[in-house]
Length: 404
Image 1 (tube, one colour):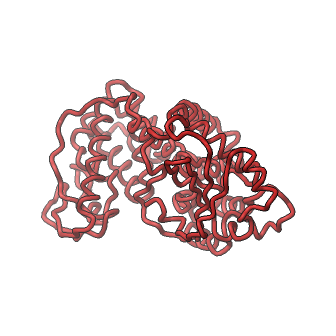
Image 2 (tube, rainbow, N blue to C red; image 1 turned 90 degrees about the vertical axis):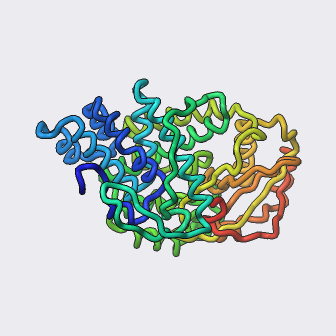
Image 3 (cartoon, rainbow, N blue to C red; image 1 turned 30 degrees about the horizontal axis):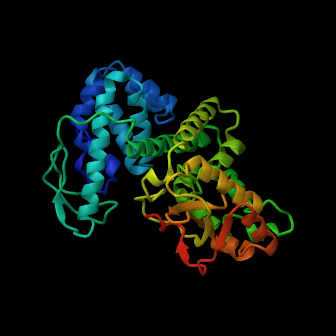
């Protein structure tokens, strides 16, 4: 790798927007990190981004502060590109802890949003573009919206500060906090010696209903064929499991992550602190009115890789759209789960539709075939709570593409 930073060979493999955002800001970030490389290194190690070996390599006395900064940034960018884009948000979160770095994080957020918009615009116009880096002589064909190299636009040197009163920014910040949590959980599983077999066994045992009158193999949340795909793809790396099932959880559908934390990381003080912090911020966020929250709730730019069929399940609520808050919506959702005897992760909230307020959920197809439609007794119980089950004729979707 060239001393100046990430080489062209790295770029031509098709980086994600987070990687490209850091690449554009490479010289500026090196200057920033060089002011306190020891702090950044310690924080990256504490958040399980860097290994002990990588930390020791960076801290070697033979490197200047600027050289250490380059090594740190190259390591972070490599993990963002080849392991998970979620490391970007861990990196941002670390920088935000120091007031003097916040100007950099504000600008990085703006850069990332610009990169996403640029990707969206150029997604349907594949082209050959010039790569950037120390050796710009090569070119690479663009692939698609997720891996293409967009044309490199000039970004203004100064940006507006992060506005906490802006709900769209608040929503993005919640997503970032959740990304940090999930990445930390994934790394902690590896650190604690949890194997892929351990984690997939736990996932296989997750039942969609609380009752025992339905056979377990009929209502396991994850289908057998899907779990076989997970085990084959992630056989030697437990860190790949959460990214592989990333469309089964989100910042507003956290029950699956909570079950993993409870099962494997109950005594991990760092993870427990992160989880408590996320719950606290989410509780505060839930005081917002649903009509103001940016939709869709769970948009994703990641390509689907593993498939599990699902069906759309909807419930209509008798309440005023303009006034309902997210915490009230969560209470209604909990009531539906309780009345139908479902586990919290069974109903994946996909969207909320205006009108008489319609909650649209995704449920694995094999589970829906057993537990829906509700029984007459369950329907009556729902109506007593002013909730009506809405049969959408079992419109089938792919669980990994509905929110793309």
